[in-house]
Length: 80
Image 1 (cartoon, rainbow, N blue to C red):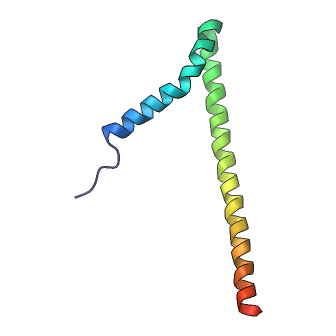
Image 2: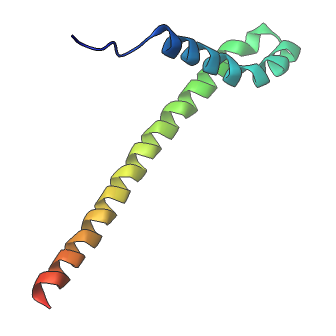
Image 3: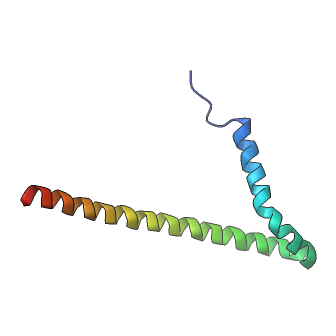
């Protein structure tokens, strides 16, 4: 029997977290009008994608640095 990956609780948490994230911006968007909602949403989504790309690049740098450190530890252990 295979376990379910996602339950109604996980979907509820996802939807609530999105609404909680958007909530601080609603008062600002209410003042400026509906015309700014779509550009503002594009702005948020664009920089979220950029942040994810930068996080992946930083993870690659971290793994590369860890590999270099482990190589020198292995090298010094075997050849000293």
